Image 1 (cartoon, rainbow, N blue to C red):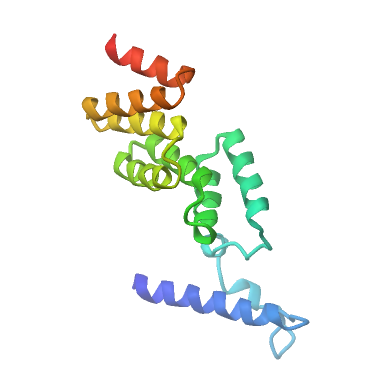
Image 2 (image 1 turned 120 degrees about the vertical axis):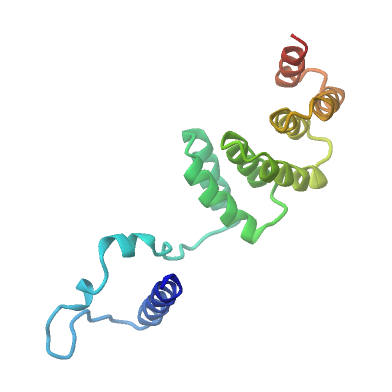
Amino acid sequence: MEKVEILIKISFVLVIAACSSSSKVNPKDSTGDSKASQSFSNRELADLPDSPKPTTPRSLQAELAEAVKKGSDVEIARVGYRILSIDPKNIYALNALAIVHYRKNEFTAAQLLLERALKENPKSSDLHNNMALVKLGMKDNREAIHSFRMALSLNPNDRNAAANVGALYL
C-alpha cells in the first residue's frame, strides 16, 4: 500500500512540474468546478518536496550559516545535504551535518561525515576536535585522545581542543 501512495505522490509531483512549465495553470476542471485542490489533504501536500529554488553554492552556504546560527538541526540537515548534492566535498556542510548527527547520538554517521571532511582538509584543528568528540561518544577514548592531540598539534591555541582533552583527564 505504501508503494502505491509513493507512486501517487511522485505522479503528482511530475504533474505539477509539467504544469509549472506551461505559462498558465487553471485549477478548474472541464465543468468549471474547482475540485482539483480538494484531491489531496494538507498533510499529503506537506509531505511533498519543496519546489526547487534557484540556488548558487554561495547562497546555499549563506543559508546554511543562518541555520547554524539559529541552531535548527532540521534546517541544517535540509540545507547541508542540498549543498552536498551539488558539492560533495564541501567541508562546512560536512562538518555541520556531522554535528547534527553527533547531537542525535548518531556517531557512525558523524564519523563518516568527518572522515570525508578531514580527507579534504586534514589540517583543520576544528575537524580533528569534532572527530575526537565523536570518538568519545563511541566510547573510543584512545582514538579521542589521538584526535585531540592532533587538533592541538595543528593549532596549539585551540581552546576547545585543550578544554576537551583536559576534561577527558579529569
